Amino acid sequence: MEYAKNNINLFLVFPENDSECTEGIVVSDTESELIFEWIDENNNAPYILHLTNISNSQTESYESESTEVAITLKRGVIYSWYVTGKINSSSEVWSFYNEGPGLESTIPFPATAISPVSGASISRTSTTVNLIWQSEDLDNDIVGHDLYFGEAKDPELYGIDIIETRFDDIPVVAGKTYYWKIVTKDSVGNESTSPVFTFTVG
Image 1 (cartoon, rainbow, N blue to C red):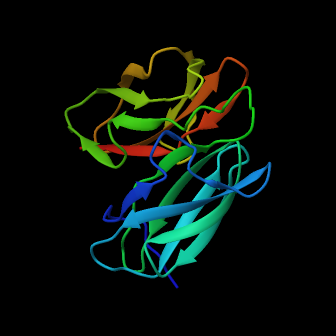
Image 2 (cartoon, rainbow, N blue to C red; image 1 turned 120 degrees about the horizontal axis):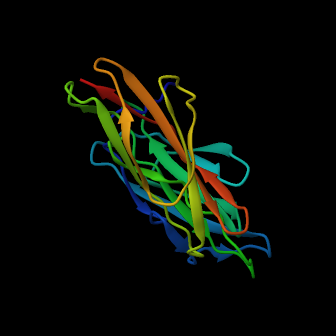
């Protein structure tokens, strides 16, 4: 069975994006159960929920005939998730922190692209681009970002320990496609890596 991740026409509801989720049913000291919910006006069931543990980058998939599914998760872990439907439908990617017992520090949420948004096409006359992103951390202790940028789908390191959530005046060439991602770092050495974003010039 094929599932396409193209148009955004599924809408995530819960757990909310960039949130600290405390609503789960505690199963044990290390696990809790959450009910994931989304909206689909086109009834593209069955659905696949893609769930990634940010700390170890492991992704698991869960199939559901309805627009919700109960999943047992590790506590004290940041997850990202999105849903794909049967026919050419997909949601955005959201992240959340599944509350755990007495953790001293949490990993930053993966950065999201603000400008250009991923998949955008900027003006063909552009000779430079300003990359802008958003990063969040429940501990509010982000100390810097590493920027990876280039024409390869796995871009190379371009800037290190960037304090601001932007990097200006990067040279670009008309007709080319560029890829970028952000590694967000906090004060105790935790890191998160964003998805690879892309944009085209012209």
